[in-house]
Every structure is written in C-alpha cells, then in structure tokens.
Amino acid sequence: MTTTSSPTPVPAEDEAAPIAQLTPRQTVQAISGLMMGMFVAILAGTVVSTALPRIIHDLGASQSSYTWVVTLELLAMTATVPLWGKLADLYNNKLLVQLSLGFFVVGSVVAGLAPNIEVLLGSRVLQGLGAGGLTALVQIVMAAIIPPRELGRYSGIFGAIFASATVGGPLLGGFLVDSPLGWRACFLVGVPFVLAAIVLLQRTLKLPTVRREVNIDWWGAFLITAGVSTLLVWSSFAGSKFEWASGWSFVLVAVALAALVAAVLVERRHPEPIIPMDLFRNRTVTLSIVASALVGVAMFGGSVFLAQYFQIAQGYSPTKAGLMSLPMILGMMVASTIAGGLITKYGKWKIYLVVGSILLPIGLALFGTIDAHTSKYMLWAFMIVLGVGIGLVMQNLVLAAQNDVPARELGAATSAVSFFRSMGGTIGVSVLGAILANKVTETLNPGGASGGSSAVPNVAELPEQARVAVENAYGAATADLFMMSVPFAVLALLAVLFIKEKALLTTSGAERRAEEEAAGKLVQDDV
Image 1 (tube, rainbow, N blue to C red):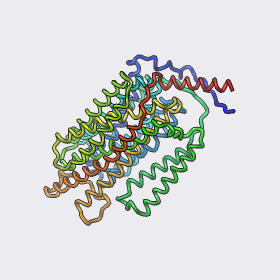
Image 2 (cartoon, one colour):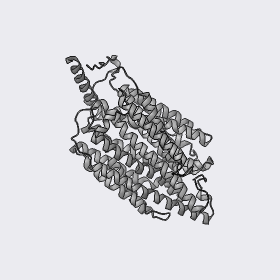
Image 3 (cartoon, one colour):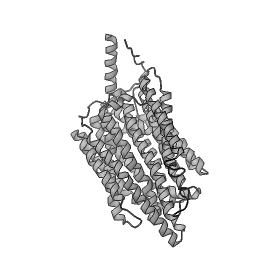
Image 4 (cartoon, rainbow, N blue to C red):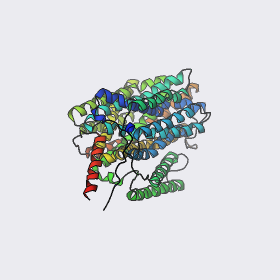
C-alpha cells in the first residue's frame, strides 16, 4: 500500500482566494510585478550586446571574452532553470521569485562596478542565477493563476515584453554607451526597477501555500548542472583553445555524458526528481522541448551577433546599432500579441506554431546572404521575418506543454521547455562565437595562428584600408553563422509538425492542483 502525506494547513495569512475569480484588471495587477522583474532580467542579457564591443575594448579583453560575457550568464541560467522549476513545485513561489530577483540585483551591482573582465564575468554568473529563477518561475506562476484557455492572452503580453527586452535591450544599451553615463549604466539601470518589482510582488501577488514533506534531489541537481556546464564549456573552447577532434574534446564530452547519464539514473529513482523522466513519455512535452532547444540557437544567436555586425561590419554607433534592431522588436511584439489574443478567442494554437516555424528558417537563410554592404532596408525586412517567426513560436511551445501535463508537474514541464531553449541558445552562442572568432582571424591573418584571442577592434580608430578589411571579415563571418543556423530551424519545424493539438483547458493550474490533491486524498482514504 502506498501512502502520501496530506498537505499541512497553512496560516490564514498565507491563504488566498482563488486567483481565477479575479477580474482581468486584477489579474494584470497581480502579475505586473512578475512582468517587471522578467523584463529587467531579460534586458540584462540583451542590453550589453550593443555595449559589448565598447566594454571589451575598454577592458582590453579578447573576442573569446566577448562570447563569455554572454555565455556565462546563459550557462548559469540554463543550468539552474530545472532546479528553480522543481523548487516551485515544493515551496512558495512568491518567495522564490523574490529570491531570484535578489540574486539579480547583487549581480547587476557588481557588474556595474567591475574593475576588470574577471569580475565582470563572475557577476554575470550571479545575474544568470537570478535570470534562471525568473525564466522558470514567471511562467509557472502565470500558469498557476490563469487557465490555459485564458493564458493565450497573457502569454501574448508576456511574449511582447520578452520581445521588447530581447531586442529593445540593444537600443537602450547603445544609448547608454553613447551617453555620459557610459557602459556601466547598462548593468545598473535596471536595479531600481527590480527593487520596485520585489515590493510590488509583496503587495499584489497572493498565492496559496501548501506545505508538505519534501526531499530535494540535490544529487540530480548537481549532476545535471555539472553535465550541462561541462558540455557548454566544451562547446565554447572547442575550435579556439583546442581542436574539435582532440584529447581535450574527448575528455570534456566524456565527462559531460557520464554526468548526464548518471543524472538520468538518479532522476529515475528519486521520489522528487528535478526533471521527472515521465515527462518525456508525453509526446507534446518532448516535441516542445526538442523544438525549443532548436529555436534557442536561432533566437540567441541572432540577437547577440547582429549587434556586433551592425557596429563592426556596418560601422554604426552603439545607439544606431540599437535602432537598427527595432524591426525585429515590432515583428516579435505584434506576432506574439495578436497570436495570443486569437488563441484565447478561438482556442486554436498549433497553426501559429507552424507558421512561425516556417518563417524561422526563411529569416535565417535571408540573413545568410548579408555582407558588410547590405542595405538597411533589406536588413529591416529580414528582421521582420525572423522576429515574427520567433514571436509565434517561443511562448506557444510553453503553452502547448503546460496544457498537456498534470498540475503537479506544471513547474517541471515549464522549466524543462525553458531549460532546453536556454541550453540550445547557450550552445549556439558558444559554438557560433568560436566559429566567428576563427573565421575573422583566418580572414584577417591568413596562415597565422587562430583561436579568436585577438582583441575586438574599434573600427572608428582604424585606418581606411584596415577598416574595410575588418568590416568585410565580420560581415562574411556573420552571414556564415546565420546560414549554419538554418538546419536547426528546419528540424524545429519538423518537431512542431508532429505536435498534436489538444483543446486548451479552462481551469487554472492552482485549481487543477487542488483537484488532484483532493482526488489523491480520496484514494488514500479508500485504501
């Protein structure tokens, strides 16, 4: 006979009326703090993209450091998303969100005051820890308080916010770099808003707390983190610090695979696994995870390396480079918002996934044709195509997974989709960054030592002949990176085509969780 511990009653002040009874206005107020925190956290990862050439130049760092400033935050975020997601199934979600915001504030302050590249890289890890929590928790809380049928509308708003932060960050970063505040303001500008979000959450977000005996899978968390981190370190260094086919590659890949295999064995046996293996028996969740990982390569790779392309290959100032990204913002915002509203109205969601998945490889292939002299109007058209594709796909993959799992696995399913999307993006940035560094080095120094260790140039300070050579080298290398991303987007389309559309549920995650707990107690009493 199997028994389960019943939920422990909570003090009255921790209880809250079902959030589903709130009006749309009240619900928006309840999630406003979540949206604000998520916006600033995403902004932190993108606001530096336009500023990075100036940051790396001022700190005397190399092209490999350029990639690591982005990669380290993504790595910390990616490795911790599953742990945050599991904690969300066990502990008070509001407290966890505030804790992740706290990590983010500390990391942002340290980054803004960093005296050298080493301190900056360390601060990015702290920011990644906070971003990992928000990546998992914001969507989990939204699913807990809003039924899937209504979630489309709010997911559209969330997608618009994500789009604004993802591509609007470079615009803000460029403005700050060109202003008297300098690049350090890119890290500090969001701190007041995060603090405001913490206060707003304390006042507006009311979630019921169910306390029960828990047994956190620390070994699983360690093995997953170790395996993913080792894999990402290998993808970052291979091709630059050592050859892809080398002893170091063999050792790092072997260690990563051993850790991940051990993690799977631990997860299968543990009563509270970080990533329940049963999730992968669900066809919708599995295909959503696969598609998210593949989309991550396109999404992160495009936003990171486009800013560098605009500044180095086309000679734009940081502010103008940010302005160049506006068409992608509009494409993502309009697509995400309109699709979310239509999903809520009609209850159909797969058509938007398919259309977005078709536009992604088309947009990437168009960017594969660019060079240092491509007109801005063509670039804008390409960005609209890519932005609409991302806007239609990203949030709807999460919605599809959330709609097809029991409420008790809502946190794990949401974090799994986000985890693999982040991991795909992190590996994409690492690998593409190493390839870009090598291609530029080989072009500018044919027959010389490669490895991407040369300093990132400030084209405004170069003589005419050298400037033209650098612009052409970065233009050609960036085009190659986008063309390399096309097969991944095509595979994402294939995964989406096999996802089966299911009717959206009309009860929130919190209501479903209460029903499942009640049903489980009845079964226990009958036994």
